[in-house]
Image (tube, rainbow, N blue to C red):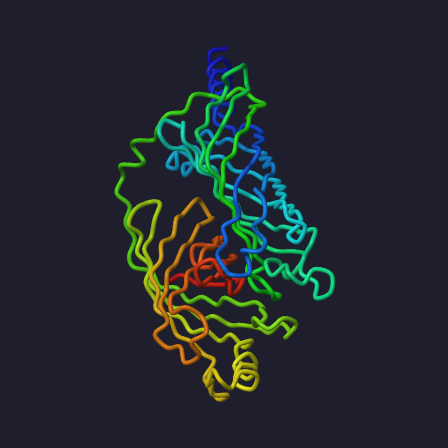
Length: 364
């Protein structure tokens, strides 16, 4: 009987603790109002109103079921739906869906949402019916959002409020020209609701204090896809961006990167020829090498098998000087194993996108 009681007690305790750490479900709805960031001359004529919209997020709240969750102060993850009306008949309206992580700071009163997905516009560029829309050259594109909120949950029963700043970005990565993309910034105000009872969270001070070391790792990465030159309807061409870099884990969350890469962007070939023939006053040599070589530094934030990556680079070899000498990249990676990863990244020059890259790499 005592053995039976002991077994029952162990089983019941394990069930209770398992339930305590299970993810819980929540939803939040925010209303957006802001401005278009005019980052290129093509955009000034399109800034005629204050964009508004709505952001709906379906969240899983973590409670420590996996160790990485406590290290990151129990973030949320889930899917989102975004609607944005640009208050301009040329730009139209955008709809987006995707995935996000929500990180908490200042005793969980401040939250930062990082979201990435795909979007559809109602009014893309058309050479006859909508030739002034240089922001969206295609109906489908990528979407990146950052939302910084003051957030209070469970104010009235399971309902709370949030308010703060929002930044949205839409671009097709110049898969099809034109593609100046569009960025908006502004405010958001909304409500949140927890469907389940939320257990108290404890900071994992032990895990955070543990020293984490790794030897320097080396990475070989191929980033590929298609893009189009700035000449509209010039056709999509493949690109191959080859990287070699070293990274060093500085703690359990982060690694610093430094490396070099070769850019074989074949759409540049015909664009150089176009510029040389069509604009002789620019003195572009038709035989100019289209290849580029860059040096870069970066930071990688590890979240379980997913990581967020940001890089800043400088072209040390750039015979065709069309773009700025400095480039940047943001992306998301998924580690299939400790050595193999894949992902998506966006390479830009400031706010102007050059390519949406499919990532395949080895870390050793």
